[in-house]
Image (cartoon, rainbow, N blue to C red; front, top):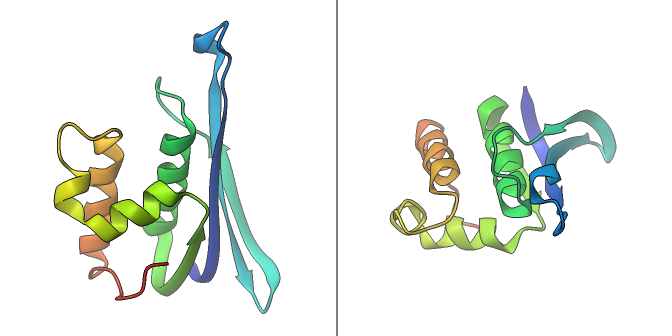
Length: 119
């Protein structure tokens, strides 16, 4: 189970000349006493491969195994903005990656909500 300090990341290698070959990956690392305790990573599932999806997927994977309290660091501004703007904004049908946002907000609700500090 993941608890403590966790760092997430996602990336995508886009090929403009062969978009079907683009592949994304995600990962997270848990540190305990400034030492690596857990490293989880993988390929982004599904046909839509992008950096934003991989960043959101990494965060979702943390939530799937989270044992509270946790402190999550992400370099993806879109994640912080989405968490700040709330579930109604993220789940609007016109938003990109609404399927992942729906899973994220459902899991956040299952865990009891967010703390008051988002940076």
